[in-house]
Length: 332
Length: 79
Image: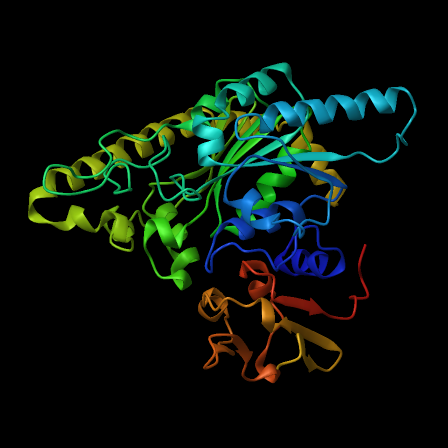
């Protein structure tokens, strides 16, 4: 696997994504993009859904991308990616482009473009089996247009369209479990990671691009504006989400669950909620039951995940998936 | 007006900092294990003591604005 120095060295040699963009200070998205792109050794083609990343990195006439980059619309990033991938295959068949170097297709979409608007085209592209890696940077609301709730917004969070107040405690619905929906497409690799654990994310990307067919990684990214925390705490807040088991880090390899990071001590979810202004109303006396329900939900989901992981433990002990074995051999 | 890229060197290894890209988010200051990074009065990054730098690369990995790049001689035993 890569170490941080290798990633940093790759960064100084050929930057596929560069600074000078207009994303907010303390934004988590560039951390996701850089770690993902630096972990891929082949040339890449990037397809972006509409979102903070697309808007802030490609202000006319400038661009922050040093790789082929395509954006079509909000809802069809995955459909555009399947078109690009098919065109590449067709050109290769006609011998119009050299066959020797494989190209990786990476799609970046926010939680709005993935959980809500782009879900239909993503589901279709995954079912058709186009070979690309879909990375969802999940900052849990439509941050680009002014913090509207999305189906990734957690229960109890205050956003501009689910504001907290006298009669409301924020969003009243539980968030959608997208990683489970992706797992239901029978992909060979589905992962869930966070910006705070760069090694975990980098390893998952390497595993994902070495599979045949589509792969999906859901990465928790922070938004200091929407989550209302200090910009310097961006990485720490993401880490607390993992340590409180709100956002467990796991992977699903060919339908088998594997926990990639188990917190040494499971912290109460309160410690994570306290760091953010969007949850500050939950600490009033009237909202005590909401806080309890959040902890209950997190515990239930965590125990369910632990159960599934222990059921599938034999799979990772006995037979290693072929591509994992090949990767290990390549490293030796 | 500051020069766009400030080069700090320790022997052959270099830490290059693009100060004009810095938005002053403080993430690197928080992450640096050697504790040598700080923000100046204009809220932009400065390196206090380059001799203490261990060239771990965590600043280059974390910075959302790509301010840091590390240059070092290639190790001899690369495969």
